[in-house]
Length: 129
Image (cartoon, rainbow, N blue to C red):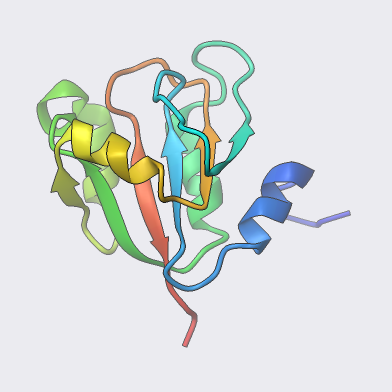
């Protein structure tokens, strides 16, 4: 049994398979997920778990060398934008439509129960050296 970190076995296994330059998505409950990426659905009910909590747990498990979010989050979800803009590296912004296109080439999508708009982010994995 793990002493800390992600304890969901499916999610922990999926995170362990990520390698340098792989991308993964932390998504709200409404983001369309195409066939292709592995989907780990941790949603329980709308609102649980929250995007912020899942992002914090996942970011603590990975080396992140790039962050991508939708331009629309800046005005459409200021709370999520504040969270994302505090990340290092700072997020690159693309349109929401472009973000949805990039989901298809991601290795992993984690669907949360978040039910606020534009609570989605793509993380690119780095290396610890």
